[in-house]
Length: 358
Picture 1 (spheres, rainbow, N blue to C red):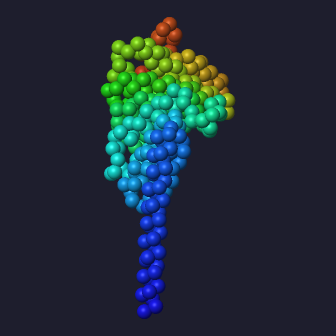
Picture 2 (tube, helix red, strand yellow):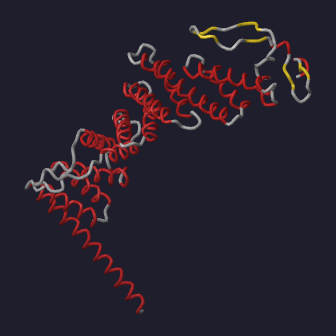
């Protein structure tokens, strides 16, 4: 019997508390409306947010957040307005006009991009809060990645990442713009930004030429889609620069091995430079390095090592094979092309290995 009485009193207490909370929520909302009518917008926003906290009814919470956002908007506290809209987008998506909420979020992002900053105090205009442009665009794009405002916002966000020394995030932003909005003007600008960013990354060096390869891919994609674009000349010059960067990297590796007297490894890098990047300056230097390696071997009376033989099997004939062509490129003599029918030298067997024996 006593237990039933206790439970009854406890439930009554909860009901009274709930009624009290709802009453407080209604009172705060009413106060906010009065403040707003008197153009005390920040006080109105505070009251509306208090109503949102006190309310248990989700509809009341939504109305309070919408009203708070409106009050902050009138006070030109756009960052605070965005926070209210974000609460609506994250917690009440089925009870709001989601399209309009997200549209307004992008508009706020544009205002911050144009230079707006919320003030700490309305009567001290020169003390402002931090720039929230990147944060706002990130959240708005997460809410609606493919809306009509997304291409420009994503392009702007990519540029902001570059300004803040975050090239990897910028590359992802530009790539997403091209992927999600392929036929937009923003996609064209994103392709140019992507190409330029990858070009700068390749200049810094990346160990395996991965950034350079990605840059070439971006260049080729742009030229294929925009063959008559005014920027095509810059794209082509940039392609040549990237080829030179890749060639220099391989050439320097070959030079390192040459200094270490590992000629068999060095010549493979030099030959790759000559074969794959013929029109670059490192190709000419690689030819000279190969000539020095040949002199070094001949001076010591050496022939092909097993490593050299393995490389030779991929396209280099015997040294004494007859010359069948002496190629010339832009006035530069290249290495002669010899007849491979004479076979290659196998040092271990001390004999000539012909094609039919391989």
